[in-house]
Image 1 (cartoon, rainbow, N blue to C red):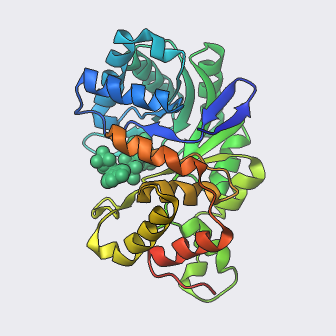
Image 2: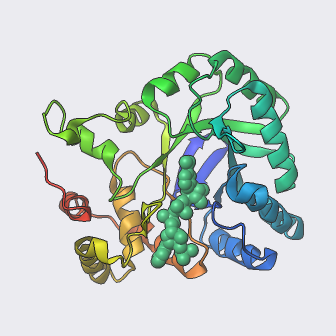
Image 3: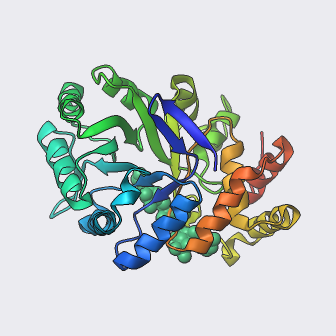
Length: 308
Ligand SMILES: NC(=O)c1ccc[n+]([C@@H]2O[C@H](COP(=O)([O-])OP(=O)(O)OC[C@H]3O[C@@H](n4cnc5c(N)ncnc54)[C@H](OP(=O)(O)O)[C@@H]3O)[C@@H](O)[C@H]2O)c1
């Protein structure tokens, strides 16, 4: 496993364990899966208050209670600000951020988390209020580091204009299939629709500001379609991945990981598997270095892209 040194006491594994899909697991089954990840050198676990309606954090907390020795090996990140209910909405109010963290700490059975992310932008945000909330959480020792998710570059700038702590992460959907942030950078100033900048050049912004991008849903085609792996609608892409998998004697998922890590933005992909075998297969991707030509071939074959 490779690691990214993001702050003096923040050394994160290049691959992160996403906890969105764990809520239906048994405690012992999850404990075993976490052990596999820790044994592979994965020290980073991504949560959100809403995963499984709170059950994912709760179950994870049960594992930590049974295995307190795991906690010191872990960097725990959670997210807040998506409100579910009669009407779904986003909430960056100080009261909500602080309450949400307190609830997460209770469910996770820990007195602090290493990282808090704001899950989705709240257009009603007051950056000063967010700054107050972060400061209080930092001063109380409940949260050490902060970041965001699904934000564009100006939203990050706006928040950072008040927030004292550096925003270290932006969690964004990214995979060979969902690569808009790369595509618009390849079609600059052209009339084709690929030139449309949907995110304020977030890829370049994050590189410039040394913000670590955490790609999510790396094996998904979309929510509706599920995974693209072995999906007949993505036959050409699967054939392409298989050819590389055969050449490197690894799985197709390892090639996807290698593809994400080949980008010099130095991203930290978050995987969502609930299977030990899949974790081990993906970890093998950290040791593969694709050439520039390989990288572009996978990008092109993923959805039959063309280059300008
Ligand atoms: N910030 C956000 O808005 C946001 C949104 C969504 C997710 N996330 C984060 O990102 C994490 C990952 O998201 P995700 O679960 O959608 O990602 P994912 O890694 O793309 O997983 C999606 C599906 O792919 C399957 N899969 C993975 N490896 C496979 C393999 N080798 N063969 C066959 N199927 C395989 C998994 O099933 P198996 O269990 O069968 O392997 C899983 O159901 C989440 O847990 C969460 O932490 C963040």
